[in-house]
Length: 100
Image (tube, rainbow, N blue to C red):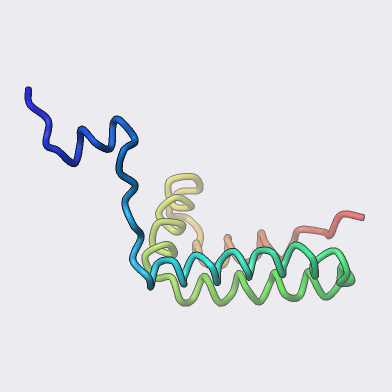
């Protein structure tokens, strides 16, 4: 089977595809954000980290409707339909004691 010129050059590493400028900018911001978090997180007290983690989880749960639907379907598969699944997921998170 004949390969297209793009596939051949990619296999031989002769051509490197250029990433669009907006993706490069996004990747730079992601790298910068992760680098900043790596330096700042160890300096914060654990109580504040717990609060920030709870806030981030709450925001992600409420903004990511697709992910929330998958999570609730997984909980339903695990626990069945006898409980309100939103209460099960939330109460489980709240019942976790912080490790010291």
